[in-house]
Length: 166
Image (cartoon, rainbow, N blue to C red; front, side, top):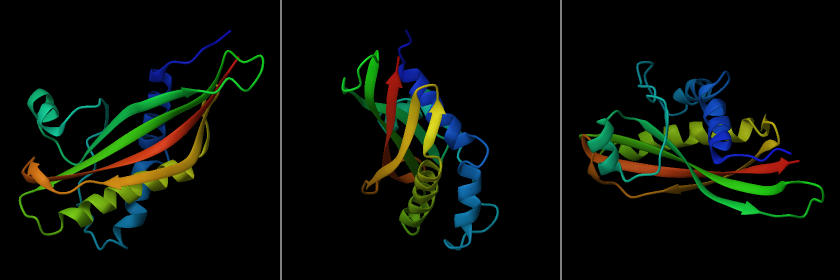
């Protein structure tokens, strides 16, 4: 018998985002429609954590744009007989951007948010043993607030990982 760990789910999503045909490809494809120059910055990498931006900055320093990955909830649905676990995990990918001017910060956030959403939707299917990315996403964009370089804005992309383990 084999169960799953939340860590496996998060590692699977991180691999999808950072792997081949992942975020870099989506960012490249979206650069022209957003009218961005080639020197636009790449996210520093995916960090697994759920914390307020000010706590992250105090603990790790600030490096933006940032992608924060976390598990929002796990829901068991024991509908499949002979399975040790069947259900789903809701995973959140938070995108954080910052700059010293208010002008253009939301466009920058939309660029990275659309790229993450694109990767998750294109990567639907198996992401590990008994783990399946549904391809369904939901996006929530937060208001600009004080933080980072001066202004900080974030969005959260939620996706579902279906889990079936024997």
